[in-house]
Amino acid sequence: MHEEKLSADIENIVKKWEGKKGSLIMILHDIQNLYGYVPRATSLQLSNYLDVPLARIYEVITFYHFFKLEPPGKHLIQVCMGTACYLKGASDLLHEMRDILGVREGTTTKDGLFRLEVVRCLGCCGLAPVVKVDSKIYSKVRKDQVADILSEYEQEKAVK
Ligand code: FES
Image (cartoon, rainbow, N blue to C red; front, side, top):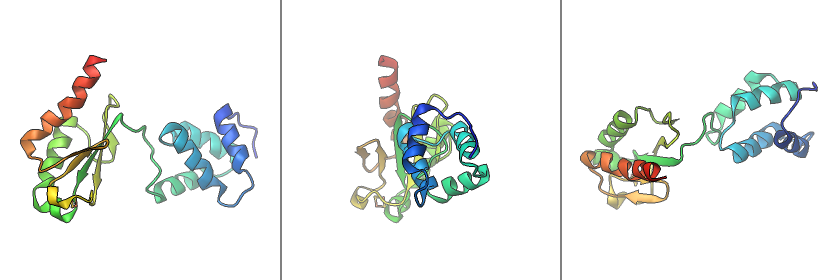
């Protein structure tokens, strides 16, 4: 191992898992729990400290859907693209979200306010098409309602 300086938080995590089976995955799990994602700078530190190639660390991060490479948005938008929602026009909703937010699914807006994700079924197909923002479900959403839904959360930011 190299003597690469780790932040105290990361050092504690590494010490907790060092030498244990599957330690790299567990270390990355704890880092994601700490930051909400795995920062590139942290992966670089880990690579040096553990003497594991950076490519190996990224292999693990990208293999498991759980790991994120970008900071999470303040609000998580989930557009359901399951069959019921898709048949009722979910792709129009997704395109509208992309246009208004200026991001693609799997990414976060520059201001960090929204993260856009696509999901396969939110378990309430009778309400299709469905959009979920954080824990709130919006049912039978029309394309012309998307801007209003987003503005609820944008206003919250303006008030603070
Ligand atoms: S398909 Fe969208 S909620 Fe089930």
